Length: 626
Image (cartoon, rainbow, N blue to C red; front, side, top):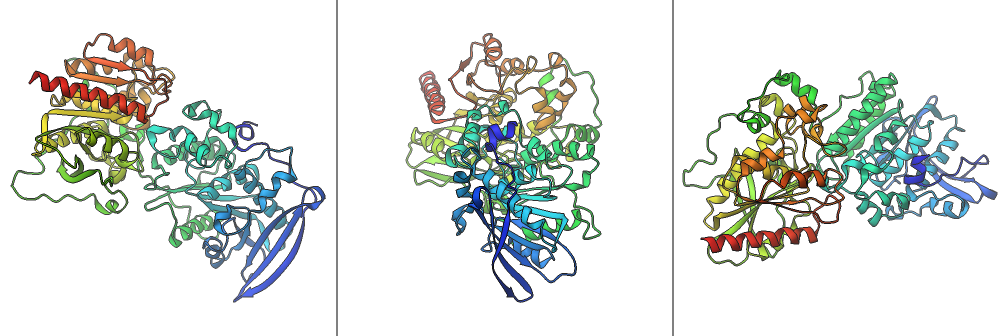
């Protein structure tokens, strides 16, 4: 099957000669702790240690199975709730114990199953044993694990239907976040990173799809669909570096249709939490809450899914009441953006210090720390704050780059920003950066946006905030407002161009892997990405099935920008774009320069150098003309 070929490697069949040897047993208060060695495989040379934590009981018990040893509170929490806790010792040795599954490689030389697959296969051997015990209620065998152990929990449940519930926790890439949303624009753990840093976790063939994740013949929604209609709770932190509220929500919505089709919609849950990657005792209690509800041990139903982004095109249509209607011929760009509400200036020019706060997330998202730059907070917009990075030494007013981030839902602008910021300030630029609505410190702010502003758009809000940032930065004494440049990657590349269509102050604009023509978008990032997926421009959704009729496209944006210099970076292997169609579009505009490096959709150091050298030329040309 495809999963085994590309993801896990070939997995051996279940052994038919498993035997269990109780090696020790003792009491800890009312709990019986039993140590067991399972032996199986050729000449019984395979072995797996299992530890059982058995609470007092009258009849068979539900099971909480995990490969987290007792240095973590996973099994202990479930035991306190009346579950039979079962620990199998197939896990990373970093957790303090030998990984029994390592020897499976020698035991089954004809099978190339990867490390995570071996851990998952070990979970099934533990289930083999559990099926022999009178203490076990076979209807209720739950498996749970965190991070890399969440990945293996999903694999185990996908391959073993005897596991009747699974709670994978913050496994992120290769677990609950689709591979297609781990590419560089999303700044989570990519295929390139995970196969480079942990090459033993998945099969090496997975690396073939680095940079072209869309070519993988399945995705995590397909893997997780193998668990349906059994109980499944998707859970991660939406503020952890490798997490993604956006990816998890898309996966959940895809799985909803499967669970509904199979008549078990209440067996699927989504719990997105705030905080760091590591779990708390309260998180594990919540996982057991889900199991109690899913197993019918309590009268309460499975909790409603927790959305952070929460956008759907259908919900927008209900909130806005909009239907397809004629658009104004004289200003189609403004029609797409929607109606910005009247706003007073903030901060007001009262001459004293304005305080703005990102809220509690300031504890998670700090400004980029570097001894090579100075950092100054700058209030802007409506109670927002940007960070201004300055060279340690400078003379006179200095040019400014406003840095616009990609689809970094869980990390905001700061992810991967240190090196380019240091290079720009070394070259004599100031850099202003901030999180767009729905990202980083503002990740929670987009959820109810269309209930609050149904005739506006998220991209419209991003434009308004970027214009406010331009105003605030231009008023800084150190900044040369005549040399103000917008530089954006992916989402930021879109924001840079659309902002410049409404604001004449940016002297030059750079869009890196940001756009593709929309009217001809086939097999690339098309209209639905704007209207249905990210919710940037919902009104475009009425044309999602007939993009050729779209009222506005990027040639209209270039027309509005007029004679200001624009640099487009269009990597030749960018799966989100049609570089030939884009090249054809921009040929009519003498002010637009397009470079096509042989690369995937990313913003690596060589591409940054292309951009920064181009900015230097614009700065020099501007100085000569003054």
